[in-house]
Amino acid sequence: MKFGKQPAPVADINEDNLVVHKPKTEAAGVKAVMVALERAVAQAGVARTAQSLLRLNQRGGFDCPGCAWPESDKKRKAAEFCENGAKAVAEENTLRTVGAEFWAKHSIAELSTKTEYWLGNQGRLSEPVVIREGETHYSPISWADAFELIGEHIRASTPDRCVFYTSGRTANETAFMYQLFARSLGTNNLPDCSNMCHESSGSALNPTIGIGKGTVSLDDIHDAELIFVVGQNPGTNHPRMLSALKECKDKGGKVVAVNPLPEAGLFNFKDPQTVSGVVGGGTPLADEYLQIKVGGDLALFQALGHLLLEAEEANPGTVVDHSFIAAQTDGFDAYREARATLDWDETEHATGLTREQIETVAGMLIKSKASIFCWALGVTQQPHSVDTIKEMVNVLLLQGNFGKPGAGACPVRGHSNVQGDRTMGIWEKPKEWLLTALDTEFGITSPRHHGYDAVESMEAFERDEVDVFV
Image (tube, rainbow, N blue to C red):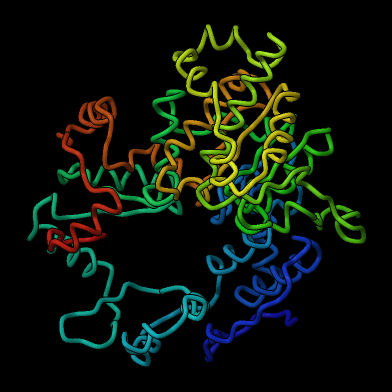
């Protein structure tokens, strides 16, 4: 490994030269720390790297531009980040810059052949650039001219032929100003990255529990008796979640992993901030692993609901939280009727699991007095994702797993601020109360008709119905 600031790579990597190794049997550990530091120092040098990483996810510092996993309000470690977070900060924090000389040297045709890895490692844009009709290279443009050019194109179009996209990498204040700008112009064309990740979570949670967001805090994860990790690879995408799961395990909690892919981090987590993670064998996190067929999650949770109701019928008052259901829910009788019978042959075929495996995790649910279901894109990207998430909520409702410590629904977001974006008004289908408040506060007239989401924007491009895309 090389430590010290490095120039941008000249040669690109060859993505065709793939090497297949045996599956990893552990995640994190000392190697992850060394790789993260090597990447960070190569981009920004030792001093700048130390200054940034010591502020990362700390009070008075800044949130990681990587995943959305939260930090504790009570205690924070000195290194409150993972390998992925350190790599993300490295590119944000880089001392490498891309200027006029770079654009003159590399044509658009050449840049289009480069990998994202190579492009990202060249450095930060130091000024706006433009490509005009007939040109083959980007060229620098002043900020004043850039803003004028944008305004010229918007003025030449109509509001609904303009689309304003953003992602969870945008801060709350920026997102609020961005949606206000679009609505002041007269459009709700505000697609964002959540259209392509957790839109199905909101579509399932809003009509079932009344809010399209998760219902748990980090403390709930620590205090849960049972956590399902469904369609999610925390060791790859949310590594700091592994520390939270370990704390849950240390307190006696259990973890069930549901995924077609065996995730190394859920089998052996080597926390580099503990002695056992450095010199020991690590911590096995998943008590049960269900290697489910892709798309089989709906059948699984239908089966779990059936088994919970069956156990309640055998021992009334021991499984289902009837007082919670009576006070807080509707439709229990219809649900009970729908889950009264189950075709086990069809369930095993749909899930790829045995009846015994499903009954084992159902037994864990029956014993648990505080359960959390976590899920990510492995669930939300299924064609029947909304129905699947609604079924997960149904199972949680059976045992009253809302409004109490260590229990609830946990859609694990991707970008660090995708939920904040939506809260700030980045949405193509805004509620009337938001538009009324904007109009009252800012003296504008917000459009009431819905705009394009991310998919609809792509379709509008195909129909040549978009003039400006920001």
